[in-house]
Image 1 (cartoon, helix red, strand yellow):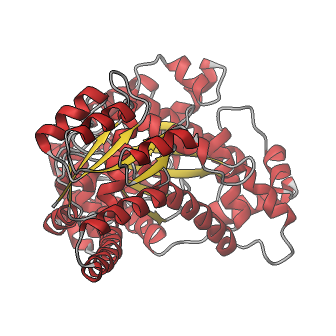
Image 2 (cartoon, rainbow, N blue to C red):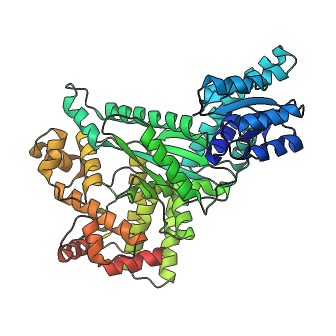
Image 3 (spheres, helix red, strand yellow):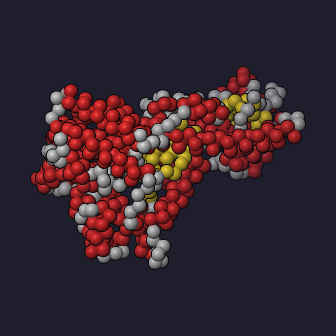
Length: 533
């Protein structure tokens, strides 16, 4: 094993170099970094690394002084100088002191790999043997990428094989010490202009989805390029979202991952050029200490995206108890496999449990409505059209015990069909719903949305009725009320403040609409959510 020491007074630079080395070289051990020239000399004397990557400008002894001291003691450690100076005199002095190569900050990964490979190659007696090792590493990296993609897919589908995942990490030289999943969604309001300029016949749902996936792939590729310096990362585009699976490593934990991740994602958002005016937002799951818990992360980061009302990065704050969440997860898995008898049994058990708690039939209907919405989240349903509170209550209204069970199973089956069979909507309807989801807090009209889409108000109204079986006002109200319920899950704000956050300036009007659409007052809904959670 080749032992490598990194010396730099910037800790983040040390972490970045360490990650790049581990991502590109198999048979290496990166020693604990040092941050000044004095410690660098001590570490070389004590640990005798094979390769030293040292910054010229460090406190105490600078890199050149430390290198001169080491050469005076006849250490044969290979040296690569890493410097922010591009002045030839500094580089010439380093080479005269025996440096084998130099890097200029900010370090380019390809340049680093090339320099390290060259130095390591000189340390290996047989060049042919080194080339074989290099070729094997390239093949291994390709295989690891394919396996990583497959394992991320297994997390998204809720079918993670923990043993295979541990093997993948082990081959990367990693041990699972906690991780998170990030869902990235494009803010597509600005893309509406493309529909207006598209030639006749080209503005189809398939073309819109292809454009979206291409942009998300662009973000994923650059996220991998820029962030793998600081973490183990795997990405995948799935059902209109980009997922980033992130394992930070031993120095990041549940206590500090939020600050660390915010800095990385903010850096990513600044550096990635998508298209003029196009931005993206991120939903982040909870920190998971156990690998088997990673299957909970897709639903969590999608829920965080739904609650992302202001900032560009939103962390999942919870809202359901483990037992409710696991029941919903079980049903989502059964729906994915079309095991409807298992779905029926699970819903029946939940109703039986609620009856044992002496819940009324009306309370049971309300609990099932909440439960179905959670199942829809886990199924990654992109449209609110079939799962709004108003629609759920219409389906449940006046249903007795046996009928409630059948109605719930039927609704879940329809939601699953929409999710897994990819029900397609007219592209104008898709964009209208997305525009409302982004702007529901504002005073918004049918005419405004139609103008954004480049079509008439009459045509948009007719499309909404045909595709979603509802008017513009009903759709906007459903979106606002559903977001109000999301806020009630995670906030203790008073009702009038929640009303303002979802677009209703009049508290009385908000109370009236909330009662009409949910069948209960804001206070009653808050109590129900606490019971459910």
